[in-house]
Length: 348
Image (cartoon, rainbow, N blue to C red; front, side, top):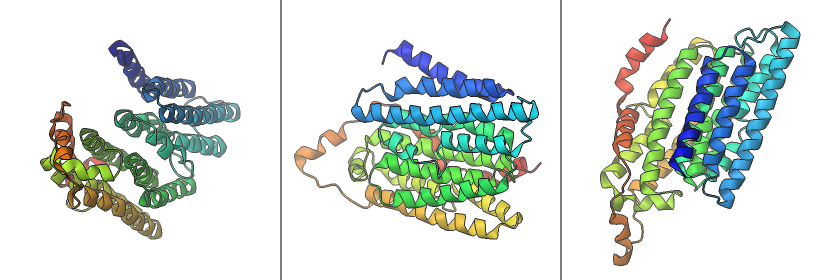
């Protein structure tokens, strides 16, 4: 892609998100979301592969549906209450519709079905943008409207954690596994949103760091299926021994960064007398943990069938920059000791 066009599209992505962040009026927020969608579409379809075009079409249709729902709900809210302000959502009907529209935008279960399909058709770089940056603007709106209907949030959260766990169990495609992992993490964020918005933000940031790291590892290895991970030993032995730690951090195991948000969320849910919800969420994390362990096993404990002619191309050094990968990997593994500082910041 022409670097000037790429720069304009990335600028459009950044501008759309920034407009949504800065807006207090529903029309402006909607405009930011639309700019976001339209800027990523050429990036998704740039390889002109039938799968990429199909994924782009699916993405466009779901995002357009969500944007139409959002516009409809904000007009309904203005009609019922005379308010266009994002933080003045008083009527339960438009609030619920907007919550569902934003859930569709980020891919929360039960309106998640587009996300694995779309991510599967994209290359890893655009997939990374879709899994991280594209979640920011809708999340900013969800945090601002602070939905009062607690039941719908808990249902969305629990179904997402369960479906994110179940859906990834049978997959062999890495991008689909990452999509289900994304759905499960978003479920955790939505569960705790009404009780502690700052904790949701912390979870979102740690999820971004871990996902960024995982995508970069797969990109460095040029891996798209579980079987392709088995060749990573010969390409980057040190990285291969660190990757299981990143994956287990995504799963939320104790000495790693990913344990911090899960631990704080379970603690918050227990404080709110939602012991059953906390138990279901914790058990659903075990489902996700299974497929992260499966990836770790494929990477570190299996050897790809070797012959002399086959090993040569694997030893070619990669030309891409490894600094972002090194920083994000260190953050994905080592940030748990900052948990007390995070809790101090979170408590008002």
